[in-house]
Image 1 (tube, rainbow, N blue to C red):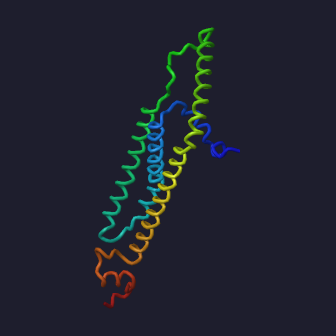
Image 2 (tube, rainbow, N blue to C red):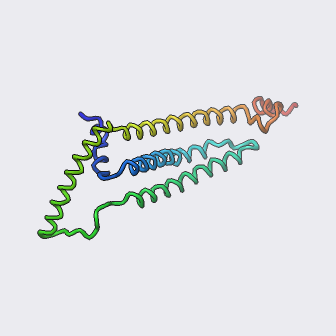
Image 3 (tube, rainbow, N blue to C red):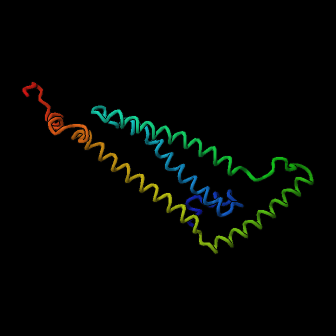
Length: 186
């Protein structure tokens, strides 16, 4: 069984048809950026919820998270619109649909598709699916970078909320935050 059929890429290749290499690279970059932005948009409510509610930097962090989430959402919509404008269908809308002219148009289209598939198979065998491998590597690298950033951000948020913000709190304030005095004997 072909690996591309297993993952469902064969339908995507058939749908792309006559895209040039530059168009495939642009489409891959757009999809990769849209994947990362979509992940940020999905994680955004959790990030807003996990912002610390106390300390002098709480408002700054909240507005940074709110700005990143909002910009990601708007950018995702804009890139989706741009992708729909750049890669719309290539068949003419006024193609004949009935009678002998419709049948002849269908035969011409089927013949063109057969030639296109043969050329695509030759090109794919020569290139050895390098673009597909590059796209997968770019998506995996983006996922790993996102996981790395999220792990570091969550570790920072945990230590910041537990030990206090060292940039804005003095050592005495951090001690009082970690060891509260319920009777105020200080």
